[in-house]
Each structure stands twice: as structure tokens, then as C-alpha cells.
Amino acid sequence: MIDLDFSFEPTPWEAFLQTKQAGDSIRAVDMLAMLEGDDEEVLEDALMQLETGCFRLDLAGIPRGTASGEAALRLRQEMEFSEGGLNRETLEVSDPLRIFLEEVAALPVCGEEESLARRYASGEEQVGEMLTNLGLSRVIQLAGEHTGYGVLMLDLIQEGSMGLWQAIRNYRSGDYAQLRDRWIRFYMAKAITIQARNNGIGQKMRTALEDYTQVDQRLLADLGRNPTVEEIAVEMHMSVEETQTVQKMLENAQILAKIRKPAKEEEDPQEEEQAVEDTAYFQMRQRILDMLSSLDADSAKLLTLRFGLEGGQPMSPEEAGRVLNLTPNEVLAKEAAALSILRDTQ
Image 1 (tube, rainbow, N blue to C red):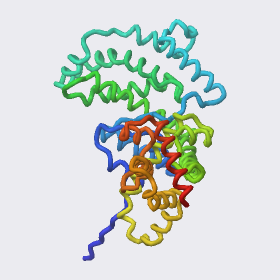
Image 2 (image 1 turned 90 degrees about the horizontal axis):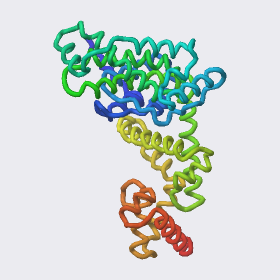
Image 3 (image 1 turned 90 degrees about the vertical axis):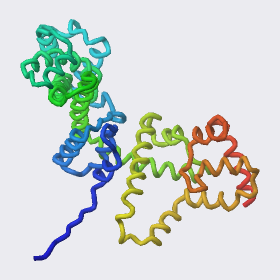
Image 4 (image 1 turned 180 degrees about the vertical axis):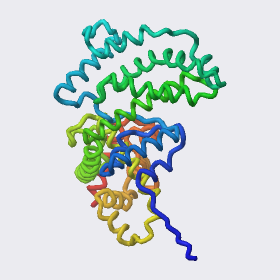
């Protein structure tokens, strides 16, 4: 009998998830970028992994208010409805959302949630309906916080209700309200993530990653220093917040690359080293390292921190400023002066 030993390299998503622990937040945009090109079943499996692993799904970076046509009008109306305090009287009498909210308001509610949750956990299944009725108001409130992401509020409430039921079923002890909110938020975030994928967010973020890298390298070569997020945002025609989202995704991708690197045994180390040396960043770093002796100790230290010359990661102006007790603007000014000195010595 022949034993066959099959080993498969983890996908980028699986390798990324292996770096996380239960309770950690996973950014939906990171997941969508890594799963771009995979079919819907792969996304559903990934979402199930998050659910069973008790991860949180972070919607930071998912745009709001990007729908078009009648859907966009309704989504804006629901955002205004939420911002106005979820007052159902402001909706048309025939509006399905208002009708549902009035039905929920008419439900009999009694008891205290955590006490009922403990009773349900101990086997009193008859209190499940009471617990559900009590929790629906919280589902509606959290649905209001999630409006504008492309999913209609009634759909958010439906997903949140499923999350509420999961919380009821999974509660054993401790803070029930915290568990309830986590499950409700997760189910709503799942629906929003799926809708974001349908809107092409994964491909857009992959393109943004490539653009960010190109702009970062070009500005580094032009400016002679690491560009700020604000400078990159201007070149990419994006807001600072959107650019920071892309920056965070790129950092996660770099961490993932380091994790997966040992598995690539067939890769030629000389070719990899040559690829690094061809980058503008490496060339700039080497030139600075060779010429630091012409600078005073403070300037040399500043450039060492900014360019990661002692083996660490390059620091932002804010990070270097904290180490050197300088403001970010002072760091940039002193960096520019030091680089000017180095250029004069060439």
C-alpha cells in the first residue's frame, strides 16, 4: 500500500486568518481584496470561518452612499431616517419599513434580557420568544447605524434578527448585551460585505493597492523622503481616509508576504534580492546609509529612523517625532535639510 502525502499551500486568505485570534477584527476590504476572483462559495466559506472563529467584521473602508438609481434614493432616505432618530412618524403611512416598525412596537415585551437569557440557557426554551421580542428594538437601532452601505434597512433588520437568534442560542454566561450586539453587528456586516463584493469593491481595492505602490515609489524618488499619506492622497485623487484604508491593506499584504515567504522554496534568492535592489526605495536607502558619516548625530539618527536603516521598519513623521521629541513638521523639515546636505556631498 502506498501512502500518498498531499500538502497544499494555504491561500492568501487562509494564511492571513492564521495570523489572527478569536475576537480579532477582520477588515471586510482586506477580505474582499484577497478573495477577488474567487466565486461566491469561497466568500461564503470565508464568512463562515469568521463566524465560527468568533471574529469581528470591520466595515472600515467600505464606502457609503455609492449606489445609483432608485436604490440610491432609498438608501439616502434611510440614512436621513436613521440620523433623525428612527422616528417612524416621518415615514409614509404605507411605507413597509414603517409598517414593520409599528408591528414591532406593538409586540408584548416584559422581563429583563440577561435574566431571560440565563433562563433560556438553563433549558427554559419557552422564554425564547420573550427574549426575541425584547431584542428586536436593539436590532432596529443597530440597523440604523448600518444604513447607506447598499443594503436596505428591512434587509439589515432581517439579518440582524438572525444574529439575535444566534446570540440567544449561544449565550451561556457573562454579559448578554455584549454578546447580543456582537452577533447582530456581525450578521449585518456580512450582508454589507456581500453587497460590497457585488458592487466590485474587491477589484477596486486591488487597483488602489497597485496605484498606491506606484505613487509611493515615485514620490519617494522625487522628494528624496518617504511621502506623507496626505501627499499620496493628492496624487491618487482620494481622501486621506480612503488612502489610509489602502495603506492599511498594503501593510497587511506585506505581513502576509513575510509569513508565506518560507513556503516558496523554489524561488531563487538571487533573483529576489535583485528585484529588491531595483526599487527606488532600496537605492535611496543605500545611498543614505553610505553617506550618513557626513551628517551630525541628530540628523543621522533621524534618517535612520525614517528609512529603517538599522533593520527596522521605516517610521512615519509622527512615529519618528515621538522618538526624537519633534513635531511631524519639524521631522520633515530636518529630514529635507539632511537630504539636501547629502545631495551636496555627492
